[in-house]
Length: 175
Image (spheres, one colour):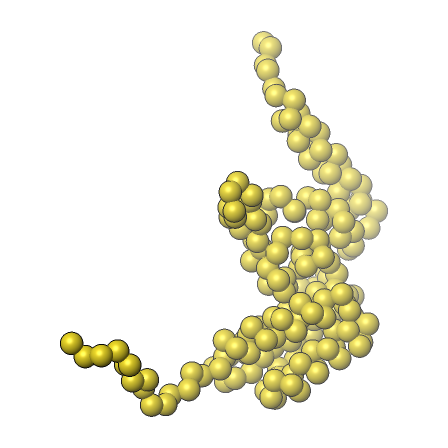
C-alpha cells in the first residue's frame, strides 16, 4: 500500500519527532529542569492557553491566556510556561488590593510552593514603586519592567469605583 503524504506534513512530523526525542533525552539526564527554549519550541504553536484571532486582512494575531503572561502575547519573552522567572499582577479580591506574584526559581518541582505572593493595598504610586523594586531593581526580570507597570496600571484602573456625581444635563434643544 502506497500512501501519499504532503511534504509540509512530513517536515512538521519530523520536527515534532525530533523535539520529542530531545525532550526524552533531557528528561533522562535532568529530571527536574527542562530548558525553557525546548519547552517554548514544543508549546509555541499549540497549547491550551493559545487564542488565535485574525487582525487586519489575513494577518493572524496570537494571544495567550497564561496566568503569568503580563501582555497576554504569545511570545517567548512573556511566556509564563517557558521562563523560570515570571511575574503576575492580578486583582486581590473584594477590597481594592493588587497581588504581585513572582516565581521561586528553585521550587519548579513543587507547584504548591512555586509562587511568592505579596498583597499591596497602598496608593498607586507606592504600588508602582514596589513593583519596580521587585522586578527591575532587584535584578529579577528588568526586561519586564514596562510590562509590569502597564499591567499594574490596567488592574488598578479596573479596580477603581466610578465616581457618582450629578448627572450630566442634556444640552440638546427639547422638541
